Length: 72
Image 1: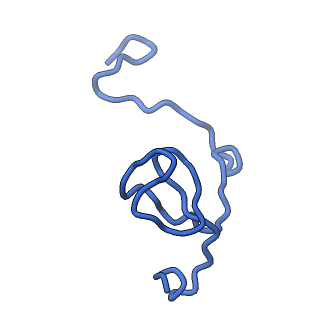
Image 2: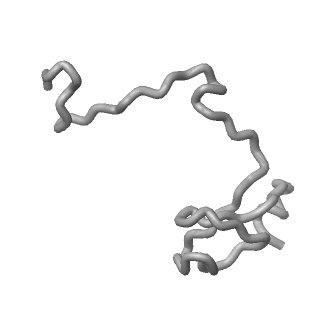
């Protein structure tokens, strides 16, 4: 019995965080891309987009990037 089953958490599938392929059970590596330890549980939960939340996407500026108006 998996930890999710013991906790009563419904799991629909497992997903590779590298390539996005799905599996019905957990595996140590992804059969699609071959990445090890990349399979994660994909819980049945509502996925909301930025616009669904009423937010607007904005760029994130780092210290080394020039801003649009030329200032730093």
